[in-house]
Image (tube, rainbow, N blue to C red; front, side):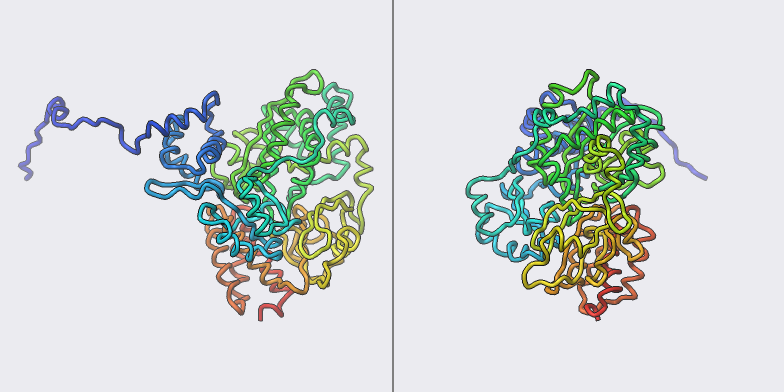
Amino acid sequence: MNDRVTVAIPLAEVRSKMKARNTPKGRQVDPQARADVAALLSGRELRRDLLIEFLHLIQDQYGALSAAHMAALAEAMKIAQTEVYEVATFYHHFDVVKEGEETPAALTVRVCETLSCAMAGADELLKKLPAILGKDVRVIAAPCIGRCAEAPAVCVGQNAFGDATAEKVALAVKENQLRGLPGNYTTYAKYQADGGYQTYLAVQNGARDVEATIKEMENSGLRGLGGAGFPAGRKWRIVRGEMAPRLMAVNIDEGEPGTFKDRHYLERDPHRFLEGMLIAAKVVGIDACYIYLRDEYHHCRAILEAELKALHANPPGKAPLPKIELRRGAGAYICGEESAMIESIEGNRGMPRLRPPYVAQVGLFGRPTLEHNMETLYWVRDILEKGADWFVGHGRNGRKGLRSFSVSGRVKKPGVHLAPAGITVKELIAEFCGGMQDDHAFYAYLPGGASGGILPASMGDIPLDFDTLQPHGCFIGSAAVVILSDQDKARDAALNLMKFFADESCGQCTPCRVGTEKAVHLLEESKWKTGLLEELSQVMVDASICGLGQAAPNPIRCVIKHFPNEIL
């Protein structure tokens, strides 16, 4: 029998014994940090999707993201401090400094260590620079920065350049050359004077029929040039059939090692893709366009900011332009994947979404979204003005169209080469790249960047196009072609690429997060455990959420299949 008696204590008595708190629970906001953040955000709309933009403002101003500034930002935006922290720590270009930690050096020099730059001596550069630049400059290894044709490449602050030497980097630091500057490019005025935006005006005023325009795009066979290869015209038709409002996301993240074609076109003729974007927006019925630009392209951001300002100040035609927002990436390869990019535009960690639903149905802010690579839009004007037959009229070996090949590695003339679809790598090297470098013989090639696999020179007669490489365990992707010579090893290339994938995995799914790390350890062994590597590869392909984990094993499988002499 329970003899205990419950006695109610008056609430007033409880309150009288409670110790009053002077502040709310949790980390308190420093008054100076609050003032700093308020000054940076003054006059700006405090939308949740602009979180990454605001983090950039703080990083650029103070060289790092202190705990105090992140707490102040969370307060200003009325979101949890954990939200700010988890987003900031996801991206490479944000330096998060916790309480008690030292702020990093005021200047950071990033040295690309991915394949083309590694072949060009990036490791030696990484060894030399710390002693030359001193303790006031932080030197770190970085993933691809989109200058593979000019390897080795570095980024001094926000100034990215290629053909880097220790002396060249030291001079840039000494002379405070910390921002990349735009070169000569086609301005809005020049583009209009040369007949630009006339096709857009024809669509805008109804002189060019919407259905006829979509049909012309379908007939051209233009496919997504970011790597996925989905037919552009069909995508327009699908998204147009979804319920309004509809949005557009333009992918200029271009993080695939070996790829730099988008930068090449953007820094020369930005309005050609902008006109293509506006045509697509008008035809599909887009309310707002979001342009996602990788952070390494600082000079391109300056170009776009200036030209979008000019475009809005004097828009072509009488109809108002759709809302156009330029968003800045923060160093995350995974954001090249369309749904991860959309998450980043929304101000979140760039983690790929599960499908279905597809982006065309439920994309940005839950709305149907037309997602395009920049180069895909770049070709819209030419196709509509010259006709689908003009585009289809190019091609070799039974293929149709044109491809912009980003070529790097052991050739005399690396760079972006516009060539017929279906050209072989041997033809590409001979006709467009000036042949192999002196004292180098063609040994192997990557037809589609880091994830596109590795093939031997003996298989150099395969047409380079969509659907031609899959039977061989490879794909063309964004047409990033890296050439290896007899002075290179395919196994070393595979290890370099797998380290890249391990660093860039978003960590969302175990097969990719753990699988890439495990693969690195296995590839570092002198003799590869091919059976175990194949089992690991199959798990990653079958169970990874997105293309990073699914395609990461391609280089491994290719080396095992085509270069067995290197791994025994």
